[in-house]
Length: 291
View 1: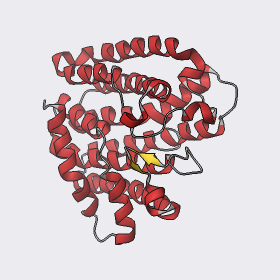
View 2: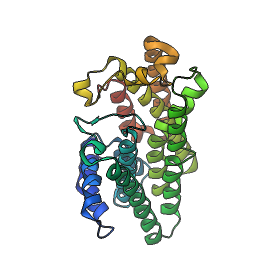
View 3: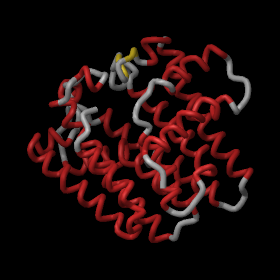
View 4: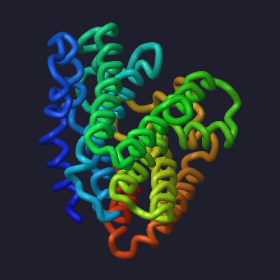
């Protein structure tokens, strides 16, 4: 397996070119799409997909289009999250949000365009490789990004603001709004590698636990984080009356849950032996991230 930085380099080198490989895209829509797609970030999801494929014994070259597609889906979700009708955030990664830089109309279309492009890229791979793996991986990604996954979680998130906080609601939001897009790379990467079903199930378990821990840390950073380091404003969850782990368990309870859930994520990797060390290290780094 490669290092995080090596997987990251692969993604960075192919991300924009993969988008442009679809053909002519009008410049007015290509500009905001590339603006948000090139805004930086850790590229956690595409890196995870490549590493999961590697861990399952597959070829990263075959997984690369899916990694790029997944990052496009993640980027579209951030563009739409920042809109005034959603989280109303005017800054993303230290830069003006897409709708601030290009207007709400083009930001909405840029998000739509990235989602559509991601679908087309994965379906193209399914046609090129009719062995069933690419089609199954594409189905996995779109299901976890869709109405039973991320979009479902986002819907509950925005419609339950300023409502009584319950564990059932908070867990549903976190499992779907956040964890589904961290579970998708594990599941899709292992599917592309032709991994055994028990390995895929272990990858799903890891992704779900990692996703819950990731959102717990996000909730903590919104309370205790440095806005300058985060590249966005803090304290927004409380202002909006969001259903968060902090609102449910408090700061100390969230920290305890974060450590326990991270341990559970790591435990799910035992089936992979030493090949799972990449993801063990990733989970531990996320436990101590500051942005």
